[in-house]
Length: 469
Image (tube, rainbow, N blue to C red):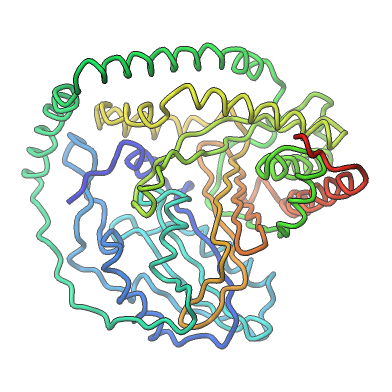
């Protein structure tokens, strides 16, 4: 049994009827589609690599400790793997609508927190897989690593036969409570007694100084952001239904913009998204000259040797997208300046240590605090934007090549729109998840991102490469 980390427990506690907190994706493959039975047998053969997929969350009585992962004695893979089809020939628009309905539905929190849908009937003899995994189980980068569960690098890869599995005994409520109390008392002591000698103390002191410097360096940014006029029309209550849209780009386009105008891939991507929000607000008559859309940008702090671990190791920065700025080059410069400031600040502070501080928060207060912050609504930012780098080599499922993949990022806490960005081979896709009632114009945002990238590419091609940047 494993106990949820404070970050993972926060995502679990934040789940509500109108805020399902799973991440997901839609992957499209070349045909013909495999049979439902073949897909089920494939997943059964892979499950030993990810034991979490057979586990469910068990809460400790009276919230005396963070919840536990325990084996589900009633695990049935046929519940988690679903089968459906579009009327032939199904278009990408029809797939998008189907995926929006599937991804908008909550997972059953009493069962292992994942689903896979096999979708047949797409045009050009294509088929698709819609996948959902709860955020308390996996963050975006670990979700990319989990592709090894289902995907192969070789179209002729062989798979072992499914093995028998017996769940471990679930502890009683009394045993869970006793274990939680013991851990609450002993965990901080273990942390203190495990501290090494003087050299580690010196290193810790230097880390604290770095943290203080980073905090001091961040004060002007926070003060500026506190006074910045935000696009308040983007935030508000969230309903139970979702609209989902997507845009596509080629890496060659992003590279052209980056080479000609400077900055990083992330800078270019955020600038294109800025154009999307600018078009959206302009269409609503809510665009001011100094308006910004503040987006939360999650950042992975997972170490290279931790890739594949099934938990959340993320922090976040807040970037002001200058939607009121009419000049695309000036938008890029603004975003680049902010991201450079955050990079300098992150180098001076151990983000991993800040995240682990949550392990000392009383579990009951953690549950109440997360739920309260989600229900109170989000005042500081209007969007979530997360970029997950995917594989640059072809992936296969049962010998069929994946053509494209589009990400799904949840919304919650009054932030009514999120944008997931996923790269695969030489392409990049943008998956836009939005509240159904608040974003009837979600396609304006999607198309605006595409226009934003086009204008950056056009400007980059019209001037010499910024080789020194």
